[in-house]
Image (cartoon, rainbow, N blue to C red; front, side, top):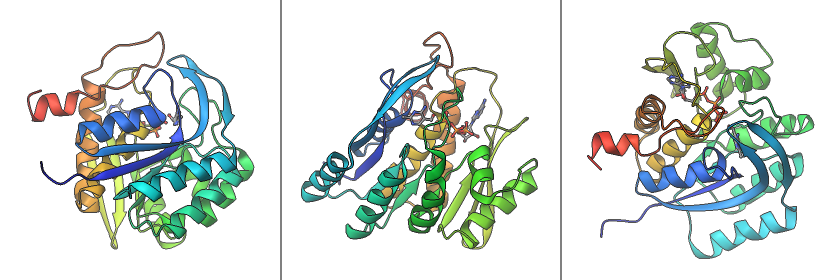
Length: 269
Ligand SMILES: Nc1ncnc2c1ncn2[C@@H]1O[C@H](COP(=O)(O)OP(=O)(O)OP(=O)(O)O)[C@@H](O)[C@H]1O
Ligand SMILES: Cc1ncc(CO)c(N)n1
């Protein structure tokens, strides 16, 4: 048996399996990484939208994290939906205390259906406490706009935003996802003083629920396996493009992506 690499996702749930923790665990498994999960918030949602959510208590989240680090040390950690300022403060402390070296931050703020998954007053702690710890942050365009406090209209705006999030806010790398733009789906990575672009065709589908969760979970799995930041983003982009293109057509609204597609194409199963 080859080496076992381990990844931890700290995020909210999606009972229909398209986003959040559920999408992350499926993605880790597809990328042959042992998946672990700490739940911050239990969300009632499906392809039609978010109905409600309940935050898990700080004490319980704290113990969940301690249980993971007491037993099985993850090679990489990602965070998704964190819901509140006190959860963010807790996670920042735990990442530091456990000396997490590879941390992927998906700054989840609003679901595609428009429901807020992060309280407004938590944004300043997300910026001050978590971004400086991130190996890579993966905002979509609205999230990047909130972080830098400026509108993003063009590819050049995306490049400047990625650079600013690294140079001013302190992430090691930033990839701004172009899912919310028109035309080609272009993602912009800024790392080590350089801009790199990752593009695919834009697929005409409503089934894009959880694209951001899945993309950042691939990056986490690839980093856990000791791949470079650039190679991890490249694999993330290939995985998510296949997952969107080969749609499963599930649900009555914005359906989930196809987590099988990347391996079906590349490994024939
Ligand atoms: N219609 C599409 N066709 C091709 N690629 C897409 C499409 N929509 C999104 N992508 C790609 O999917 C990835 C996720 O981007 P997106 O901006 O949709 O994330 P997100 O808004 O955080 O997703 P979510 O909030 O649903 O998890 C990016 O690589 C983006 O370029
Ligand atoms: C739990 C969760 N995290 C993230 C998203 C963003 O798509 C979502 N819909 N649900």
